[in-house]
Length: 519
Image 1 (cartoon, rainbow, N blue to C red):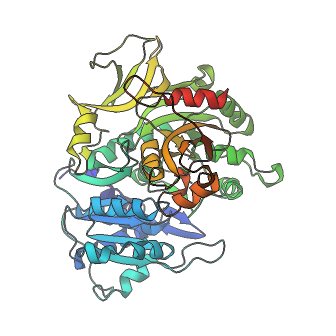
Image 2 (image 1 turned 180 degrees about the vertical axis):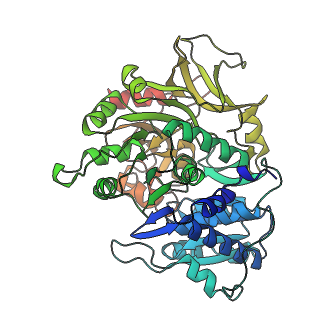
Image 3 (image 1 turned 60 degrees about the vertical axis):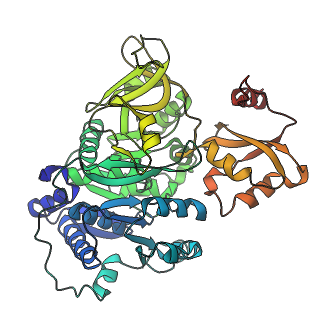
């Protein structure tokens, strides 16, 4: 067993080397490495008492909180597979995730109890145990219940049981660590199976990119259920024995306060986060003098935003990645400003190339698809051999992103071969939205396109051929999407059309629709 590739061992090791060092700062609470290790250990014991074994899936739908990380670590310790669940999902999306992942245990916050109960999965997935954590949140507050209290109060755990003594985690670092779901190109999410080795090498890449140090303080505002929050921020901080600051939700004013109060040294946000920070009144902004590295990723970044952030005190490094790989390209502050439009060069622990349709590497200046090979690749899509075979070809992971390289090896995004846009840092696949909207009784046909938006980066526009125009207002479509799609996937505009421009094969020419809207 290679202990060094198990994140639970990192926390255990730091609990021995520097037990009093703060691991997590959360809503005024300080959790040391010793306490975090003890909590993860007790959670592991609770899992065992419920019959959780190596290879079982454990799903968690929680806001950013210590409990999320305790469950993550406990799964790592036992060799169980962790499934972080996006708490923004609507009922059908959540139901698909749970049916596909079939977790042995599903832990969710009190605030999500109603949507979970509405699914009736306790009848159809009888093996799935459920645990509701926390109390209803106070106005403007956070989850008040404590996960450790829940574990201690459980009849299966009396609080006196000794910590686990068996070997940590899996015997093979290639074994699954996390199944992280990403929106689906064909209308259904895909569960990317990520190994312990992948988590480890993602941390090594983040270590180099952020120039991490034992004394660093990272403010985590991205959701932990996403790759950016879990694998680029939280996990690397635990690897380095550093400190992270987390909150249940992002607040731009509090972000400035946290940076000044906790002397935050490292920070990562998506463009939507930085636009919100730029909009904070000068009187409410705090000092940024402690920041050593600020980074941006998750969606397209304009030179104008980079310049505005630099003027405000955030000199941004850029990263680009996806759920299946985490970081795969990066650029320094100087490179980002000196080479407008670049998304950088390959990370250290991976091979990244641009290839044509036959898989041959293209020459500089020629457009092709970005492919990745190495220890940061996912293993497969969970229970989806067809899409796995389409994505993993001859040892290379095909990202679906089209790009070109200059003579110095810097990458420039051109387009996406997969029909996707990014709104507020969240991937949205039009096929998924279209599938829902085609069930609307007033719609004959629909095409969804992501268009630029000043606040969110990109938003969805629904081009509709209507059976009944009065039923196809934006308000009506939002009402129809409610409960069927997460809110960030709802179209922000509706354009009525008589017909769609199509290719000779009948495919909608979405680029032409977008050009007409922006003309």
